[in-house]
Length: 93
Image 1 (cartoon, rainbow, N blue to C red):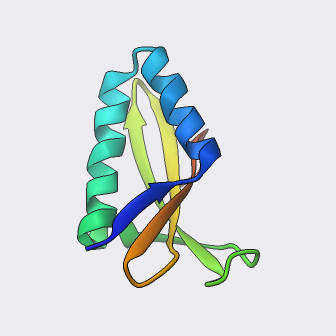
Image 2: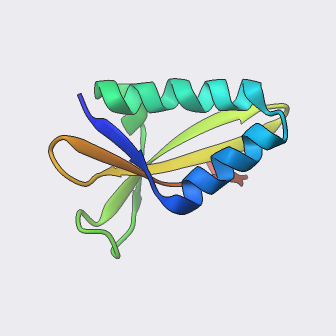
């Protein structure tokens, strides 16, 4: 089990989505955060190189809502903590 924390920019995007009334998308993101917290294999389907991070990579979770694809980029920062680095609309994956 991980404690999941959010980067400031990721938290700001989530706040904006809430203000825009994107509850369905936020529910899907919350489900994905649950996968991270639980160590579920679904949170580790896509690995992207990110040399600026300590571990050199991030995991990417794709969620779809209203025909839009969104990525949640996260990594383990300690053995007990995972950090969401970004939440972004994308055409990747």
